[in-house]
Image 1 (cartoon, helix red, strand yellow):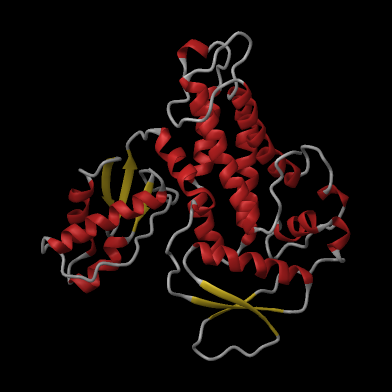
Image 2 (cartoon, rainbow, N blue to C red):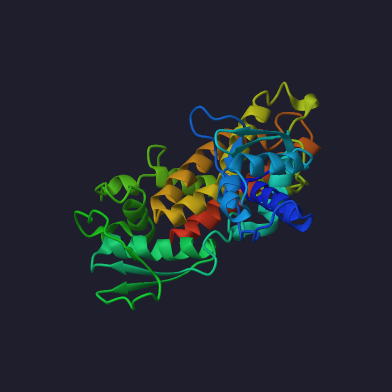
Length: 343
């Protein structure tokens, strides 16, 4: 279950409680779930009970316990625990890994998009400086993935009350990055956090593992190559179980490496939400590096080796690789960087 699906599950529990007369509140438009903080428990937690307690006229813990009973029977949830003043801590059941892959392949570049900022309008104000302009341009697209409308303005006075004003003032680039070309220059400006000075150098052009941009773009190109090579071997992608006992001796690391890639892909929706709400495209750039590294560690398990014949596991692994490709392509697009078919 992805964070987006879990959020919807919690929201459905709230809606059922309201429909059955157990809670008298306006059903919120969304529910935020997040990883527990240090000392917490479960896979995810939510403070929705604390948010609803005031309007419901009930103690937060009472609301949490009411919702926990409904959530305990929900598909995909193995356990619910109420902690503190009324936090709901949710433990997920073991998921069918194919569910995540199917969702990504079905949504493509829309995977991870949500409605966290639905209906909100932003005015992104920037100085006449190249890094600020590039950050603002990417931020506009990232905000849109969460349902917001945004425009970038320079040197204008915002209309009072017309929109949320975001002042983008990252540490300026030390020199003009244009010599690096569009893709490398944008990456150089977007990868560091806003308070860090970007490095403008040839390292962003190097075709080697030490260059994060190269790894991200190369990982995407590898997903396309795997699809082409699989077609040449007579099979296509089909989400399913990546484990195959028959081929285990040849690819002993496949399940572990697949799990690492699945974890990286499942974190994509939350990454987009954080990048939008914190106005930080660098979060997305760093997440793409994590996805790329996971894919590059997994790729060697996708195609049959030696005398193997294509199996259901190979088709499932190819589907997982293609899902990674969709996330990488979508993320690079939001950063304004090309995703090459060949590299």
